[in-house]
Image (tube, rainbow, N blue to C red; front, side):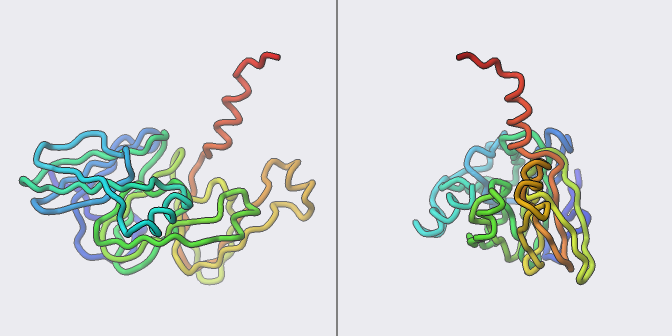
Length: 239
């Protein structure tokens, strides 16, 4: 079976491992066919199944400093490396939450990935934690992950994914909880959804991100916080 080495709306890239995303958009799973000797790094607990030809090793990548950076960025302290050590094999990966997965084969370009959305990446990719003090006021945390280099990047979402290609200078407003990933170098400003603080709070929107092109923006159709609030309405309260 021939699997896709690319996906719509991605950047230029070198040849990447064969992959396909199944069961989109609600309960997506990534199927990877690793050639002998090929490796990929994934978040701890992301493995669903694999061929016996594949071995795994879980460790801290990049030292203590990068470990704390990943923790602050909403990712796990340890990453698992899967290697087709004993011949080619199949690897299935999935996030914990229901939603979509999308593949971004990077070819020297960088992507900013928001907290908790990184799923897996080629061992050739580099990962940096970047502080975003604007995010403090948006309630989305202080840190995001910057990923760059050559290889396949897998990003997960809560709900389906909506991709936008912004032209140079084109502005677009995204709720902070719905922002998943965007091209590095884009304009990015966190502000209140309404002019007044009261208006922002009563509208239920709070803070938003104003993006400015050129670049790609990936938005998730649901948010864990919104889903949690909805579920909370059905939990009996005692007292």
